[in-house]
Length: 609
Image 1 (cartoon, rainbow, N blue to C red):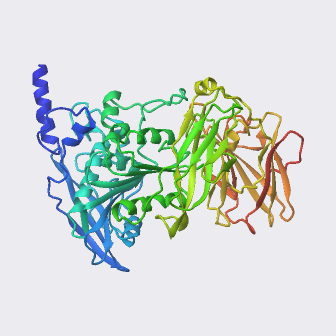
Image 2: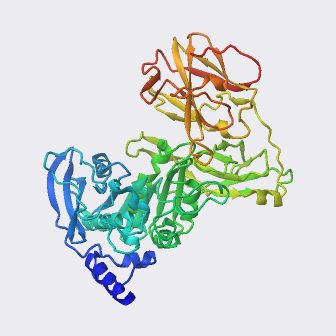
Image 3: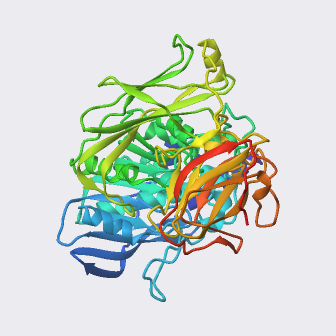
């Protein structure tokens, strides 16, 4: 009976596999990769629409992906290139979750001298689509976000390929095949040099970038952002209470065939990882762990401090410059900054050293450290650094040797020519990150580290402007927001008898909204909740406001009980939550000047609405 069942399975698998002849369920990335030839089937490319603007040719196309369970699948995409150009480097853009193929991506890179293809793997309606225009059609399978369980699945089902537990039943398998077919599309276009192909993508597109780079040797450069970090099924050693997602199927098989850490050893292309230190999706620590598995180690990291899923211009510009270097030979990246975390200093205070590459002029060097084991929620302190002309050095005082220590450096270079990234302002600065250093409590104790830091009631005097904050819409006179994770650092954590006190000066009468978020990214500690206080400002002279936890409430009227679990503080012009608007979308006058933020144990009058 068992033999008969096995023969039946093999027959079905051969019939539904993109390439006939698969003899067993793949157990490794190598065997999973080998069962598909992205060049075998004809593309059957169809041009839905073509137009030209400002010397750029744009095409809305569809092409054949493969035949799955007896039904064909087709991909819709945008393709753009400079009119009349031939043998350009080709770029494959992979959109993020909930997004779609983007005209602005193909336009940006076409104007930069590339032929760029943006595939619509998620199947959302294409930009500028007319009624009846064809879109992505996956046929009998569905690896889109209409089938979310498929991203962590190995089990059989109606929308999956194999009738038994298999990595081919995972959405990422099919999406990787489709992206590789996109490379085939590019290499067959007369405008493209097939020996100069690159791939990049954001978020889920970053995931897909790592999968493609780890399975297709045609890729000559890769640049994922906030995606593709491995070890998704494994708990962080320094945060055992954190819960990992469990795949629907054998965890070992999932890790070996779908885990990014299993693709990294197969990546041959130079790779730039664009990240944000507090990203919910592309986990910083796991990104470094995954990158270290890439054998050639021609890898760079750029991590925007304090951000989640977005970047400031000096970090965003790294991607087009990285792509330029390897597909056009027009830029040379500095080496990864050399860095060392020393735990054995005579005074017991850990020290971070950074020696940057000097191939470009150095604008500044920022040494950062944290004591929070949660990479998504941790606050990154900027250490006070000294420079001897070659090396930057900073002491990293800590409050408790029972907590881990994390440290890295960002080096900011002046680039010869101002550059930009899609949807980002032009900049004259390029930032590159060092490797990430981690010291466990055991490491600190063995090295004889001392707890020399002290609690501080001064949270910020803004002498360094927004160094410890991240800003959103900072140039918008009405929609600005300034946020910091500083209150979750033990050094600046509020105590039960203290009031959160702010000195601020507004030009005119306004309402300032202060938002505190509990358990931000810390579901293991409790439900995330946002508490807001609306403060009336009279305008004119500086004003001092002191707030207790009870002054902050949720949209449902629940009061904040204490400062203990506050992870995020935001100063905002307005706050729109669950249909309730606090503050105003029309801030009167110039943005306020924030003078000082501190913890105060004495009573102050608080003008809270």
